[in-house]
Image (cartoon, rainbow, N blue to C red; front, side):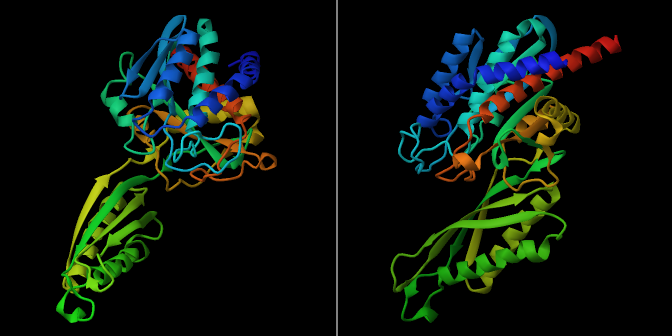
Length: 405
């Protein structure tokens, strides 16, 4: 894109910053859980209607907007997730959550706002667009995952999406900066459920029963050896047990204990191996102590793998818009998960981080923290970046098609 176009996009983003701030604060005050984003959906639809952007609903509470350029061309998607977390907010801002036990502590309010800002910039530039921009407002990223339901309903088709871009706020990155990652960016996840069974007995006569709590304790300890002693140290894997429950009284041997946790891996073969070993270790450890263990997995998100060409483009756009000194290239993937991964499985995609940290404004707390907040100047950066990514992709694809002719 030309220097003039770049400057215009940046200027437009700065001009709408007051509106972006108002939009984000509204979302922030009324957070909703995954697949319950009904008010959020209504607000998004209202904003799209005000901009004159056609839309349709998807995956229950999701929304898909379509911006058609003046001439035919490629199709690119921009994604923003919608749901909040079960956290009581501890910030004392004027825009703090009004819903007890719910908070936008992962920045999805900002993601939606950046997408609406990009939509406003792109919609005003329709005459320059050769192709279509699809806007994916996706529900339930934190829970059941809204990306797959949207894909199954056909959001990547009619017209067929050729590339996708998404962003996530980062409290580790100062406002005004972005960070990109080539290749694998996020891990895969599996929820782990183990039921350990023993036999009731009197606490005073433990030899007459089989204590499921003691058996579970040995299972927990044994499972930690899988990563430390079975997985190649050059690979990455995490087994975390976050919930344990069992027993009925202080003087009764527990008959059953339930363990719940998560497994995070980067490599598909390691993922399969770790799950196999969890079953073996839990079963054999429990049986060695006279009990039994039943293991059940709920498959979570797949690994998020960025397309190198798309990351190249985000990097170039960031350098042009923000300056090369404000674009960081990360070396290592994260063990957190992200269901944008499912879009990336189907089309060449790039997911990147948007800096929101500002120590002077006390915007220093990590995501999923009850005091998480962000420097709202980042909203203009995110809106500009997403609009720039979409326009650049469409322009470069149009040039490539002309060359091929």
